[in-house]
Image (cartoon, rainbow, N blue to C red):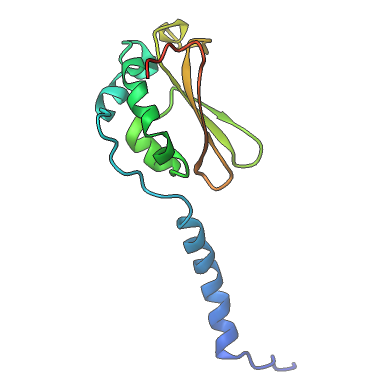
Length: 142
């Protein structure tokens, strides 16, 4: 049996560090969400599927802070707005969170998909917000 060639300490260390470095690089993508003045996250989260109609009143405040939402991680959006009413999975690791703004068919039993006005947050492959869309049917006073 032939002995294995000697492996340098550096190459052994590099094999161990590489996965950790990759994980740290991915963890560094995006940013934590700063507080949004005037926005009441608890009230938004309590209005599941927009069935109580409270989300639409808070939408202008949320949209004023739109720039702060870009590049925010999905976990931080979940902490702020709660779990989305619906989630669409796109190509690769992209996804869209949908939050209904007003009562509609989604408020019935089974929470069927609805054409009611909604807020859509698009997440890119790195898991951060890349696009924020509001249904034009939502009457938002700015």
